[in-house]
Length: 99
Image (cartoon, rainbow, N blue to C red; front, side, top):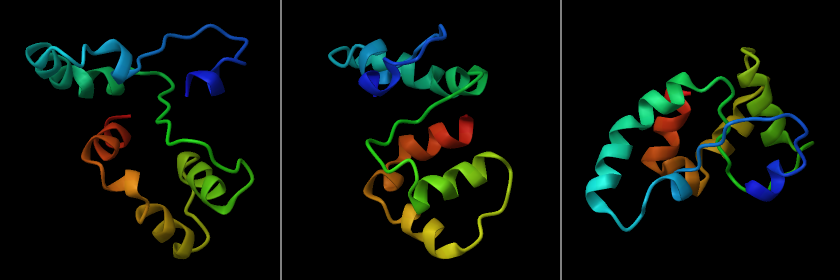
Protein backbone atom coordinates (compact mmCIF):
# COMPACT_ATOMS: atom_id res chain seq x y z
CA UNK A 1 0.00 0.00 0.00
CA UNK A 2 2.77 2.43 0.89
CA UNK A 3 4.57 1.75 -2.38
CA UNK A 4 1.39 2.42 -4.34
CA UNK A 5 0.87 5.74 -2.51
CA UNK A 6 4.52 6.81 -2.85
CA UNK A 7 3.86 8.53 -6.19
CA UNK A 8 1.35 10.97 -4.66
CA UNK A 9 2.34 14.60 -5.14
CA UNK A 10 -0.07 16.09 -2.60
CA UNK A 11 0.46 15.93 1.14
CA UNK A 12 -1.80 13.73 3.21
CA UNK A 13 -2.12 12.18 6.65
CA UNK A 14 -1.75 8.43 6.66
CA UNK A 15 -3.14 6.01 9.24
CA UNK A 16 -1.97 2.45 8.73
CA UNK A 17 -3.33 0.13 11.41
CA UNK A 18 -0.39 -2.24 11.20
CA UNK A 19 2.08 0.60 11.72
CA UNK A 20 0.16 3.04 13.94
CA UNK A 21 -0.99 0.36 16.37
CA UNK A 22 1.64 -1.45 18.42
CA UNK A 23 0.88 -5.04 17.50
CA UNK A 24 2.77 -6.32 20.57
CA UNK A 25 0.74 -4.31 23.10
CA UNK A 26 -2.60 -6.06 23.64
CA UNK A 27 -3.93 -3.34 25.99
CA UNK A 28 -2.90 -0.62 23.55
CA UNK A 29 -4.54 -2.49 20.68
CA UNK A 30 -7.84 -2.59 22.55
CA UNK A 31 -7.75 1.22 22.90
CA UNK A 32 -6.84 1.68 19.23
CA UNK A 33 -9.54 -0.72 18.06
CA UNK A 34 -12.11 1.27 20.03
CA UNK A 35 -10.96 4.43 18.20
CA UNK A 36 -10.98 2.86 14.73
CA UNK A 37 -14.58 3.80 13.95
CA UNK A 38 -13.92 7.43 14.85
CA UNK A 39 -10.68 7.49 12.85
CA UNK A 40 -12.38 6.21 9.69
CA UNK A 41 -15.52 8.31 10.18
CA UNK A 42 -13.42 11.50 10.43
CA UNK A 43 -11.19 10.63 7.48
CA UNK A 44 -11.73 12.93 4.51
CA UNK A 45 -10.53 10.44 1.89
CA UNK A 46 -10.28 6.92 3.33
CA UNK A 47 -8.54 4.24 1.33
CA UNK A 48 -8.98 0.58 2.12
CA UNK A 49 -6.04 -1.13 0.47
CA UNK A 50 -6.94 -4.58 -0.78
CA UNK A 51 -3.79 -5.36 -2.71
CA UNK A 52 -2.80 -5.08 -6.33
CA UNK A 53 -5.58 -5.08 -8.85
CA UNK A 54 -6.31 -4.21 -12.42
CA UNK A 55 -7.23 -0.49 -12.57
CA UNK A 56 -9.31 -1.16 -15.69
CA UNK A 57 -10.83 -4.43 -14.48
CA UNK A 58 -14.52 -5.11 -13.91
CA UNK A 59 -14.18 -5.26 -10.12
CA UNK A 60 -12.34 -1.94 -9.93
CA UNK A 61 -14.91 -0.27 -12.17
CA UNK A 62 -17.73 -1.73 -10.08
CA UNK A 63 -16.23 -0.36 -6.84
CA UNK A 64 -15.67 3.05 -8.44
CA UNK A 65 -19.31 3.10 -9.59
CA UNK A 66 -20.49 2.37 -6.05
CA UNK A 67 -18.09 4.94 -4.62
CA UNK A 68 -19.56 7.56 -6.93
CA UNK A 69 -23.05 6.78 -5.61
CA UNK A 70 -24.23 4.98 -8.71
CA UNK A 71 -25.77 1.54 -9.00
CA UNK A 72 -23.49 -1.06 -10.63
CA UNK A 73 -24.70 -2.44 -13.95
CA UNK A 74 -24.85 -6.08 -12.93
CA UNK A 75 -24.70 -8.18 -9.82
CA UNK A 76 -22.20 -10.73 -11.11
CA UNK A 77 -19.18 -8.50 -10.51
CA UNK A 78 -20.48 -7.33 -7.15
CA UNK A 79 -21.06 -10.95 -6.16
CA UNK A 80 -17.49 -11.75 -7.24
CA UNK A 81 -16.18 -8.97 -4.98
CA UNK A 82 -18.20 -10.22 -2.02
CA UNK A 83 -16.68 -13.69 -2.48
CA UNK A 84 -13.11 -12.40 -2.00
CA UNK A 85 -11.30 -13.71 1.08
CA UNK A 86 -10.60 -10.19 2.38
CA UNK A 87 -14.29 -9.25 2.24
CA UNK A 88 -15.03 -11.87 4.91
CA UNK A 89 -12.63 -10.18 7.33
CA UNK A 90 -14.78 -8.31 9.83
CA UNK A 91 -12.44 -5.32 10.12
CA UNK A 92 -12.40 -4.69 6.37
CA UNK A 93 -16.19 -4.53 6.32
CA UNK A 94 -16.23 -2.33 9.45
CA UNK A 95 -13.72 0.09 7.91
CA UNK A 96 -15.81 0.23 4.76
CA UNK A 97 -18.95 1.04 6.74
CA UNK A 98 -17.23 3.67 8.93
CA UNK A 99 -15.54 5.29 5.95
